[in-house]
Amino acid sequence: MKSTIMILLIMLVCFIVNPSNADLIVWPTGEGGTGHFYEIYSEPAGITWDDAQADAVSQSGYLVTILSAAENTFVFDNLVNDSQFWRVVGSPFQNQFAGPWIGAFQPEGASEPAGDWQWVNNDGTLASTFANWTPGEPNNFGGNQDQALFYDNNNSNPPTISSTWDDYTGSAFPISYVVEFDTNPIPEPSSWEVFTMIVLGVFSLRHRRKKKMSFNLL
Image 1 (cartoon, rainbow, N blue to C red):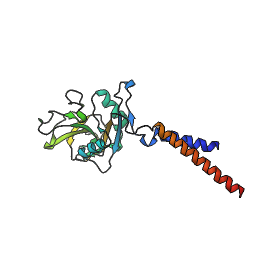
Image 2: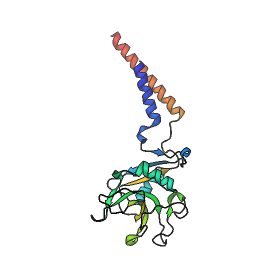
Image 3: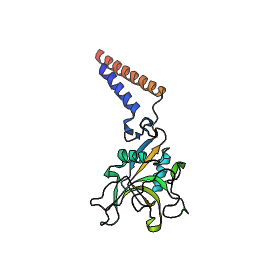
Image 4: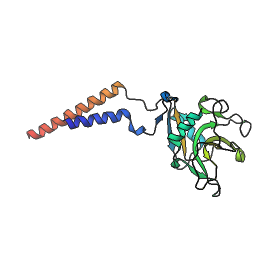
């Protein structure tokens, strides 16, 4: 009896904290943060910037808008600083590393290479908030680099991970992207949901006990 109740309680706690969302992290306002939630998504086959942003929006989020050096450090240290989210690009002699997409883009008709870069979600321009371009970027290499990602171009061997950014071709295929949510996308269960779960657990426990007693009488 006691062990069964304990199992029910553990199940309830697991339901409430939702461990399936373990990769979701919050930047607490008490630490000078935004109070927003962040998550990095892996796409081993690669994903375009447009598809990454569409997926983020479908989940009530958006590609991360990094509005300060502190936020860049938080996102990099807690999500991006992991080689599984990076892909080697360029010739074998360049050893450059492309990381996750972020929510910076250059609208059509902007002056190249650095004109009018802005954030999704109407979070302003990079000129008025923050930018962390890797040296020599943005450069609009190839003539169509209008989206941004974490990037390192120091040509080290092996390539390294960096908190700097690069302008990149949106139709290219980096293997990850960072999504930002203004509020927790996985809402906590309501009081009614918790109550219903407890009632169902108790009912199930009693039903099993009755079946066991009937079997013993036989």
